Each structure stands twice: as C-alpha cells, then as structure tokens.
Image (tube, rainbow, N blue to C red; front, side, top):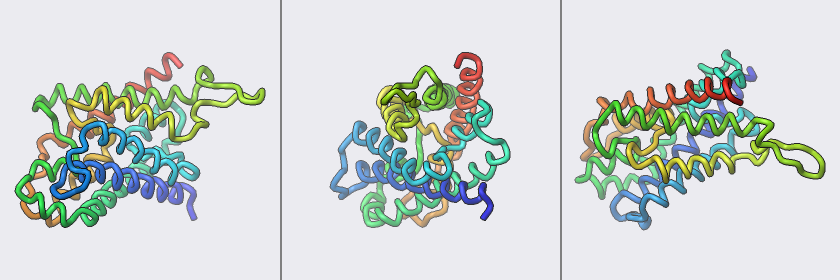
Amino acid sequence: MDPIFYKSLFELLGTLVLVLLGDGVCAGVSLNKSKAKGAGWVVVTLGWGFAVMAGVFVAGPVSGAHLNPAVTLGLAIAGSFAWGAVLPYIVAQMLGGFLGAVLVYVFYKDHYKATSDEPDTMLGTFCTAPAIWNPWRNFLCEVIATCLLVFAIIALGTAGNAFVVGGASAGTGSLGAFPVTCVIMSIGMSLGGTTGYALNPARDLSPRLAHAILPIAGKRDSMWAYSWVPVAGPMVGACLAALLGLAVL
C-alpha cells in the first residue's frame, strides 16, 4: 500500500473520531431530552479537547495526527511536513469530518427529532456560527486563535521545550496528545466565545456540508454566507504561525 495513502487513511479515521466526539458533545449539551442538555461551555471545551486527544491516539502513531488542514498547511510551510502529502492529508481530513458528523446525526437522531423546532440549535451541533455577526471581526478571531494553536504545536517540537529524563533529553511533544489538548481547551475557554473557535476547516466545513445534505426535520439553511470564515481564518492563521515559527524558533 502506498505510504501516503496509508497515512491519509489514518488522518481520515482520526478526524472522524475528533468530529464524532466534538460535535457529539455539542449535540449532547444542546439537543432536547439529552441527559447532558444544559451542561454548558466548560463541558463543550473539555469535550472538544478530549476529542482531539482521542483522534490523536488513533492517528498519531501512523500519520502524525494533524487532523486539521490548517495544521497540515502550517507544518508544510514551516518545513516540518512534505508538500507532496499535503493534498492527500487535507482530502482525508475533510472526508473524515463529514463522516464523523453523519455519525453524530445517526447517534442523536431521536434527539434531533425532539429539537426540530429549534433550527439554530441543530445547526450548532454541526458547525460554528458567530455570537455577533461581524464577518471580518469573526475572521480575525479565527486567524488569531488558529495562529496561537499552530504556533504552539510548532513550539512543542523545539529544543527550548525539551526536558531531561534519566539524563536523556526529550521534547514536550513526546508527551503525546496531552499538551495540544490543553492548548485547545485553553483556546476554547479564553477565545472561543466569539465564533465557537472552529480552528479547523475539517471540523466546520465538512459537518456544515453534512448538515446541508442530511434529512434533518426542521433544519434551517446551513449558513453558507458565513462558511468562508471558519475555513479562511484557520488557514491564514496557520500560515502566519508557520512564518512566525520560522522567524523566531
């Protein structure tokens, strides 16, 4: 099997797990008759952080677990990832995000039915939307938050973040998914209130497409007028993080 195809397959699986658990927590705290309904923002941010961790556990040993087109692009610009694998990874991530969202709908189908008179709530279990409609400000929020995420990921691999165990030096990245999980939780709690912190086109555009296609009773339009923000913002933020990493790390 072609190595890039094999790694991309695990990117698909890891992103599927990420969206299944991430959109799953949004559904759990939002949809009617869910036992988790009303659990709140802290549960959402914790749920998304652990969703990323679970996805990394699945894909990390094989693909490196980018699980995010913005991360893949940023690492390629920073010189830490081969350009030839960028497109296969992104295609796999987008497909994984779509399949993960479909599974959330299947899992919570009865609860979507019970929430059919709340179209905005149902949309929010698939994709992000701004708390205040201001697309360029929303775009800037996604740029800043994703720049922070990707810069932190790049910084984790630097010598300055190394520690010594038994006389041997090890990078913070060797701790696996935990450091990135903490960063994502922090971003969600501190910066997520404006846009819902997409940070990841595969987490937003792919589930948004699933929302548009799935036969969800009572659903609204998929807010396509906003859909460019959680795609362009993270991609621009990742590029800036990569350039910043090259300049200062």
